[in-house]
Image 1 (tube, rainbow, N blue to C red):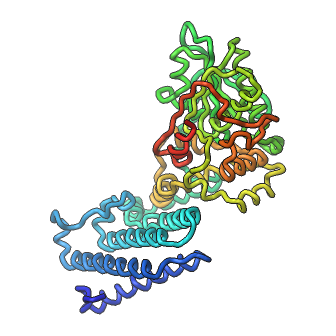
Image 2 (image 1 turned 90 degrees about the vertical axis):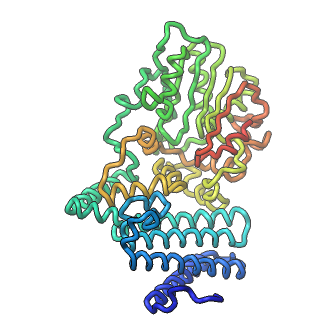
Image 3 (image 1 turned 30 degrees about the vertical axis):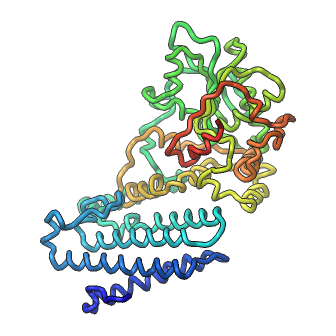
Length: 472
């Protein structure tokens, strides 16, 4: 550096700055060594290190000034919030050491992400590196550790250790149930305060039950509606509580509504594949709804993976010339898998081949495994806040019906899951006319000429809105 930092005369401060530089070099070195076969241009690395040392020096000077003039903290220009919701508590502001630690963590995080952006490699490799670095950054936040979190420490003192004891009880409970509690699961119960729209099972087979909901109007439309939810979660995403139930709303508008409730499959159903989910699932449900309602056609709605299955089923019907569906709605569903967001980072030939070896000929993929992957995509929203709240502070998470549903996952048969992975996420064949054959019919989504309503959601981290929009 061309000029000495302002604290260079202070030996302790100089030593601290050296420690920071060494820590940065060690961290960067560890990341760089883990990127086998990849490299970061030396000029970019040198520039990042120079910027890092300059900003670290500035943070250290600010911390020294605060320690030397603590009275100034009460002034408008005194202690300030760190600017990140994880460190928004007053304890992070009032404690100079905690504030400095939080600011240094954020500086380290920014620098490592900038470093990841400079790695030379193809687009998918760079995206994987960014994701891995982001995961490490989020896990290493000082807010996640009792010894470094002043909010959790203060609560432990105020409760005389009871918050720590309660946090341990929460941890043991979550270990037993196999997932981090994101809501107070004792508040909800299916049939009592979620999934309360009145209905009855009118058909069932090895893969699903078909629910028909009780009419709430004197007259109903002649054409019924069939909802196909994702097969990796329970059906009641569309029927949570009365005030946010799409099922109840549709019934109140005079529609006869049928719902596919996918079975939480066990070993006895471990041989089922994609074609089975089309033939025994979607197509059987469409025909059953039509026959029970004594209608010529059905209005169909598919949500998430349910929408993917519905699209493939409609392509089979189109190929056979069977006129069964009047209109179709897709809610956050993928048919073109060219851009699957962060989920696609987990899928490559090696990972799919490994799954095919272990599950492709039979077996069960636990729903909890997929739920963990989905949560990891937004760890700062769906994992670490609950670790801090439940375990470090010993608090019970707030009651939230959507997160209760999110934790209520279902298993998938291995062959179906492996087929889905290879032919959609990995090879993106569903969108290519004739590239796939389902139930003996070449699949061509272009032949599905039903009126369609397509919904894409901006904040969806599982079905990116651009991908859902490609269904147009």
